[in-house]
Image 1: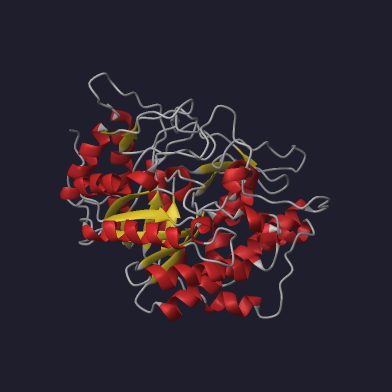
Image 2: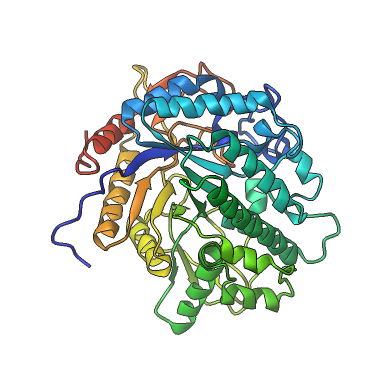
Length: 473
């Protein structure tokens, strides 16, 4: 659809950006914080550990001031489970409560809206030892954690996100360093989707609790949603795309919004004797959870083709690479799309396509919780970072949000990844995403001085115009 005139971004649109606790805070075992699965995992060779990251824990006032200088209307961040509950359950750490109170107050001081992710890849290590999400008690562990957050921060936090990229936790958990598989497990697929069921149940209960404790708050899921294309117009490729759309996307949103398992995914699980054990009352709980909006992360689309089931299951490269399930779908390259330095396809129009498809299926307001370009940024001798490639990426994607708004889709805001340079999940600090450059490397901790990238000044202009001015600097 070609619009003769695009609709403006709505007033009150949440322009901002995102981070996560374990990737940006540092101070990973300071002030009573316990270890998470991220702190004890084996790190990819040559990448920084989590002791320092961007040291946001000690620089949060400076960082929030820089966000305010850009004009942020919102800041999406996560709360580290083990900073509040070092063992995952039990005694609350007052220093953790103090830090997040201070951070939230600093955000509110500048008139920004804090958008809190409750769980972002950081299961407490103590709970990993008790079976992680494979233990049904994990539902109660998470609900207790949610209650602590709602009690302490709910007077100021009005927007909550449940579980970041639950679909990636399920599909590519080993890449993220989050998947716990018990020794001797004979059916890994069943174990993974049992863990997924527990996460879905925990999410549903947290939504219900949020609405009970904080009637004025809004809460939603935050999966990584990426529309899947067929590699051709062959009917078999269309079927493969439907299959993988269900497995990658709709399973998580069908459950969050409607409280039902997607039928194509359930058929796949039946085929592999991997249906989760569902206790009496579970599905009733799922149906009681009503998200107020959908948060979603978007980086690129996927393309698949028919699978005859004879190919080997692909090795996992990163969280954007998984697309092959023998007999279900087979990944394919899209020759129409350019790629980043880290080999991720770039598809701005696919952003619009994804938004349109989600809105058509669920008719809920949508909040972009991640979208961004990881690149090798260079700090010049005069303290500049000329990231014109990042500006181009954002220009192309933001205009597609406006196209989607003109299509009639309801959008709440845009919080790309990331506000500030941080430790990328498995590619370290060298893969930089931020509007703000942090002087540190994977090899050694630097001065940690903050520098404004060119994209910083460009995004400031975009926000000031409420998205009307996307022109270059």
